[in-house]
View 1: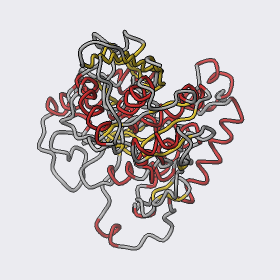
View 2: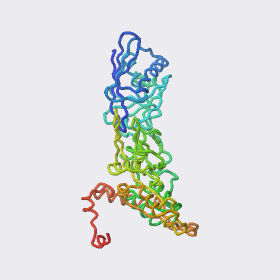
View 3: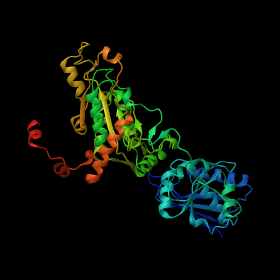
View 4: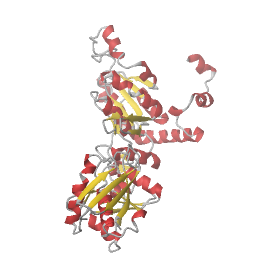
Length: 454
């Protein structure tokens, strides 16, 4: 036949809408045209596919080849459509039997020699293909990522020739497998920071445990060297393990990000610590083609903002809406993408520009006006979204030099945090930080002594 249809998927945020690649091989002068809002990388697929077909021993149609990527109003980007385009050309020219094509979805970038190169954003594709009831064919390097979509059928191929041989029933394709996730044990990175390394600061340690149990945002304020960064970096180690749903949501965001997904750490809670010179687009997400920012990469994890007042005020204020809603919508002229951003904020700051206000061992050199201006760099609405604020005093040298005998490890604290979260979920299905006003009045009633104290 001269017309063939092959299923694939585009990438829009963490969504993967279906794209039907239609190929028509007709008469006329030899040329290839492509329609359906293809961007530069997609338009260049014409040259890659033609070279891959010829180098694989296939013949290229001599007439006019028309390729349509439907729906036509959805922008297409990347090299993910190379494999479905190549199979569509082979099916339309009668070199491949197309009777099985409707049962599968294909994604992969072709090299000039016909090998399949990995692409980004495979996990959302695998999840949507599973929901649609189709099997998915991916490059071999993307196999472990595709296999994270448990319950679906994913197969790996290393070349166009392997896919064609499988379609013709000559050779089978290997099923995708996750493999061994090294470097993580029960959701905790091996050799990660341990809370037992923090000496003293018992009030701050207790506040960190309460924040972990209830999912609260927390701010540490104190002079340099009091352990603010140490405490913040140990929060992921005392959080409960990710559920399968949470881990898949986190992995889907990482899959479409620039660094990509690290399979070995897909069940480990993320810890993001951007520098204070980060722009609003880097923190919240953005660009002409919307990409996830640090808040989305910290989904179900921890976002640590050190030197909080040094961040531009506009950047900090951009966090206010995602802290409330747990997601961020990025709108551009041609496309809109929504990314999840249910993160736990941990911030650290000095009490003044020199850092030593209130420190008994160092003289503060700042005037009251300088201290006030410094602290006002953080807006009131943002501070209102931080549930716990802790002042950390400086510990004496003698205390730091002695051995800490009663310091609890992260594992011990994590067990208590997990038990506390289980009680919260059994009570009303959500953790404390997500309780509504009515639920607070129902489940957190104050006694007369507590009301009098407040």
